[in-house]
Image (cartoon, rainbow, N blue to C red; front, top):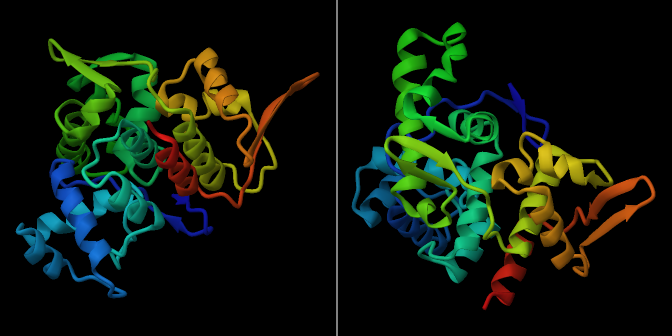
Length: 280
């Protein structure tokens, strides 16, 4: 079981996509539809009619949109991040948007396959085949039926790998495929304010209550920005240097201190708001 920020324990979800691709064209239509709809709860059937796809397909696309932090669970109302993206990057063309959404969906242990692949498998293997990735989930056989631990894991794994090689996430070049081998890249193109958004998200969901976060923690924590964005230490420090004058962050690197403090009242989407306001 994992604990959400509201102290609610929930069971990690094996199948987030149920085999449906992370199609950002459909996600853009869903986001636009829910941002236009002012009801407190938006029926799946209405979204299916508006977008022109099956209701079952809408259900799982909404699950993906929720995992990306764009809409609320159950009600399907847009989150503040979803409203911001719909205005500033409605077609998910901006690499900064994609990097942050990559962090949001990958850093949540609820998204079992996505989270484990990005935080525990790819950082170790660097280069991996589909079968090697699937075998890294063999321990799930202890708690799931043979069919669930093999067919369902493989289906979800295929969706995640496809998201980074054939869907819009391919634009950030986090993962590339050559000769049936998936190769992990270093995150060199991450905007500094997007890193700030990722740090704010990490603090809120994984270090709630901490007054400071060490640089080592940012670099090496399982669900931290360093691991998920594949940031080498020198690049992380360069990006932090670029945002050190931001009013919501302070860097303490003196004597035995090597840490940052970030304003807990400034939510991650507000960092993204600053990113959109300052992009060239």
